[in-house]
Image (tube, rainbow, N blue to C red; front, side, top):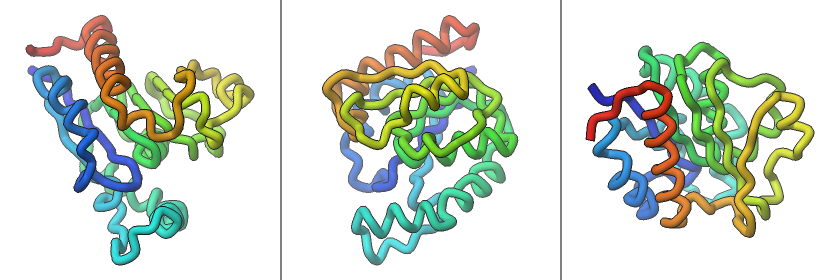
Length: 183
């Protein structure tokens, strides 16, 4: 039986996320995947899709709504791959009891405000040039390893070479962790 992997989008959602196809084609043979569009998960009003407005809606109650709804929908152990704000939703859901075995959070810069970590393996990636990434002290305080990708910005996860490298790492790690994957 395939392990469950949930994928949480960034604040732009999946509707126009052509970049997500890179992840789908590599991961689909190995995992039972469920996709959560972060904008829909938090019931955002999408009448104004400017980045500033979307960001404000997530910060002002949207993230908490997403944490609550994700907790209602997921009852079994899951692996999570989450991008940007999706990683914050998953992290906070893990703190509230969501049963996550491994959280892969990519460019989830708002994690820099978190003071505790969920009870799961956390694999974090940030672009070295992302000005909002957590500082080294944050990682040290929470006893977390991190991956800084040289010469990359916040949306590095949209690049096909990054997607391919990350997906291969996820498959390898989950296989080595004793999780049987079907190909």
